[in-house]
View (cartoon, rainbow, N blue to C red):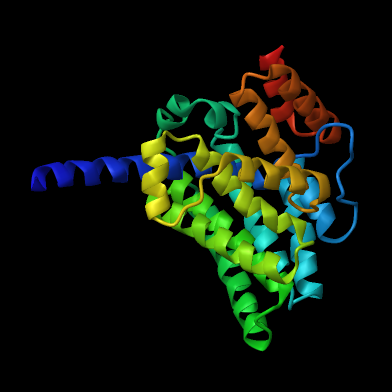
Length: 293
């Protein structure tokens, strides 16, 4: 009986690790996803928006310049440091060639990827910016536990750290833990601010991606506190896609992934066409579109 329990525990751990990898693979597009369909991105050409636009176009030096300038002029805004961390993370993902959509739609491709060789300098800058953001977040929340901007920055920081842990450092369980914590804080924020639409993304990602697992895996994940309802996930992604701001592009990219997983190549093609038009300097979308043609 003890041997059987040990075997079941090992299988459960393996299932959880696979789920953590899948979540992390999807989250890597948080800084690279762009708007699709007919509506335009809500990002403009000023402030932090300009940095995100540069990042979506894979123009990372320009993005860092915008975020650094914002930090100098707004030292109490944690989103500047979090955004700069995102630019470091996604430049590393781009360098390592792990942004292709096959990592979303084909689990075997993701699990069979080559060993990654992270850049130590990028890693240091990434975690330095996250630590800077966490210090600002903690100070602001100490003054006001309901600080919406600080809570949102914490959600983003946890998602980014989870990405690095799971994808680059292969600390899959730690990555999943950060993602679950981010979802919990997002729900706290949404209680205070139901119209903070970007926060719905954390809830949507966890529910949708984990819902793709077999029933025994979903049961095991429920035991760890994870949420695995597909329709809840898709509904939240659509809300961000329709009404979000910084994360609106990401939600639309995930909806394109959902279309591919459902073998709806027509919808996926339309979404990727929008990505390529919106961010012409990002060759990723053009390459992925060519694969569908």
